Image (cartoon, rainbow over all chains, first blue to last red; front, side, top):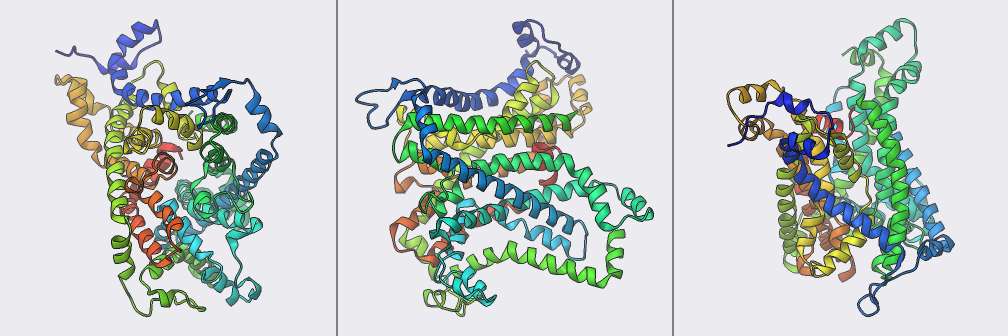
Length: 313
Length: 282
């Protein structure tokens, strides 16, 4: 028979000795632990393993015959000396910065537009979800078709606008344009989430504030600048950090559309790491790259947690 | 309402608004329309110097060939299988965990919640290298089990946070009454709380399904036999096999998008309260 546990007892727990706490809160832990254990095993173990492997010479082909051996910081030293790594870091920075600023900018503009609640805004608010709904690989394939040099609709539309010399331009075959072509696809898929979130935040701002400002003679621009944006500051901060992490992680669109090419022009860190691991089979080196990525993401995540916890209080 | 009245008096402003709205609408919808249009076109109407927006002659031939000449239906079944199993496991684990986090205060609660939140931030590339080695040691490479094990890492966190939001919204008095009536906590959970939260559970389950349905990187890395490919990997492999048959590829992409589209529209009304409020706190 299960003993009668009162809800109030469970909520009022300080933190004494570990076992006492465990026993006292066993019902709570019984609910929470299965999920934590599953995620913990599948996440914590690999994270430890990736750190260990990063200090090893671990070649996927040699490991069965020769095994792996500790080589200290060599992987890291080699990475820091490798111009390809610095190039990749640079590409990743441009990619992430461009994606985040364009996504937030477009998302904010569209949220403000929808917030005007003009007749028909509901149709538009559903329509903008379409890019978000589309699986990343499907949209990458679709945009590859749109960008096609000979029969792509983009070049045709540009020629209608009078940009004649673009009529057979292969957007994904030049390292200068390929990066921006992929950035546009990523922004196209991520602005809806930002717009929907910001719209929800905008609609929670009480209309009285605006009316008071209007009576005081504030112009629409002043109302945006001095009421709306300051009130959105927290959520904009959180969204910027989240987008930074998401875009830093982006992989699928890049892989399907360019595989990091042409000539490394879209070689973001994710693809650089993956190639080291699964194309060149240098697991040790790739693990060190993964640890570097992990450190970069952790730094951004710390900022996120700070913002998040501020919102919680 | 005040806003609309203001706009209605100002015709140039209204025109400007509709111009902007039209641009946003086209940018959002046109690529999808173009995918649909290409998938319903004959090849001779596709590769023309002036693109034809609407197929002069509608055909389902591309869909038929995508199914008959390729392994598309195989990929589809593989994806359904993987996504369904992951969703089921995810719903069970996250419903318990979310309830625990929502209702109890215990040492480690805050840490647990933050831990789950942080997992969402991990790039897949970081964990995929050691996971690959583990899968290889356990002989799980080229086996759907490798995906079933690794997908919960990104579906669970979202589900836990979403469901916690739903549980938070249910007044505590409900269980307290049940407990006074002599229910155990477990039976209060199963008989009182779960039935009320079913819409929330369905919504988070659908998010898990869409996440697993879309996943590409793990599947591409862990699977190498055509027979086992899931939809995204299978579709991407179309590029390597033949000269690119855009009509067929668009038909396959439409087919790949539709389940995601249908499910997404089902849970659309939970967007604001679930994903947004749960994962971000507006």
